[in-house]
Amino acid sequence: MQLIIASQNPIKVNATLKGFQAMFPQESFEVEGVSIASGVSDQPMTDIETLQGAVNRAHHAKELYPQADFWIGIEGGLEERNQDYHAFAWVYVLNHQQKGQSRSASFQLPPQVRQLIRQGMELGDADDVVFGSKNSKQANGAVGLLSGDAIVRETLYIPAVTLALVPFRNQDLFKQE
Image (tube, rainbow, N blue to C red; front, side):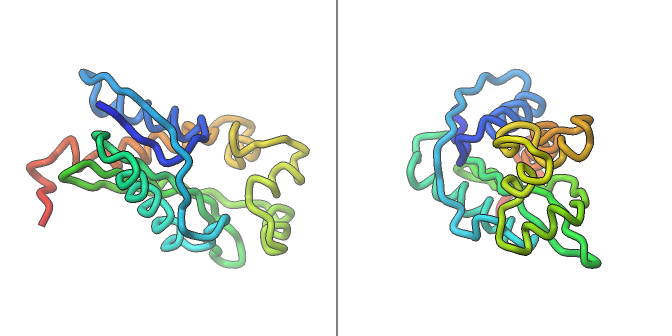
């Protein structure tokens, strides 16, 4: 099966492959990460905007690569709750007949990161400033930096990818209306 992941970030590509392998262990996959615009802010700031970014990425990938079997959009975002920012990601998966989606777990960001984001910085850049790291969004991410790598960005995304595939594994229960 050919998978088109609407990102060239190796974290998103690897998480997608692992989620598909977990749900469909008898299948083999050809995976390609491609650069696709999200059509939303560089740093989505609501749950709705973040989901829309994942949806847009998957649909644009389908338009550009119609020969594939699946198109996957993953979008990380933030949401403000009780004056704190919480980080998470949405995963949206399409094939020719079905769609599936799931949201990752979320986690709270520290005040120093929140302040930089309020000044207009993206989460990955804010993390690099606060933690003295470099390109953390293509490595362990904010979740890895904050959890001491107990959970890293890839391991945060794998369950969301896996759960977004539930409708594909249970097609009789999720017939499109």
